[in-house]
Length: 187
Image 1 (cartoon, rainbow, N blue to C red):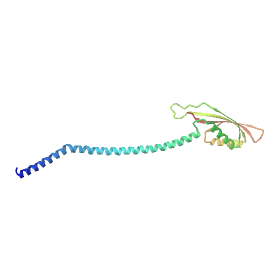
Image 2 (cartoon, one colour):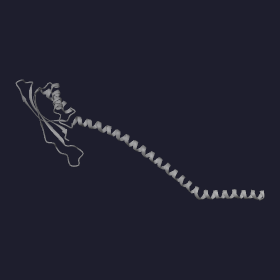
Image 3 (cartoon, one colour):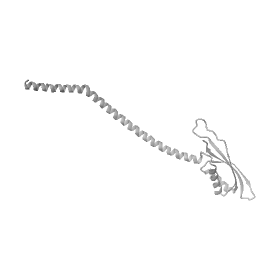
């Protein structure tokens, strides 16, 4: 074969190879590249969505943690005013300190635990128990008035249910019979 024919066949072979490469590219590679581009876009969108969801979850977690702290503080405050148990020693201490601070003398101390008042079905509230405390005191009227005033401002909820006063031989001193109701959260 002549070198010019060889050269022409070489060029023809190169042209056929290029045409075949273009056919393969157009038939197989280009559709897959479009799918790859589409999948990359979908992946980017889903990644952004996932990051946004992660940020939302983080914000909600921080919010709930803050609310949980507030709830615990509120629960502690409520438990101080309305404890979850009777705790007779604490009751006696609170009352005896208030009595002594106000210049009264305690003659007798007794208590009665009343029935628990149930809450309606499905309620989030617990039942409320009542402890009725009977105290016999001795002291002046001003001391009693100050005692009752401080009893009203005490952290634990207490109500004076009954109060009777009797005179004594000393004109400035009276005997008092007081019934105080205090409450607790029943389990």
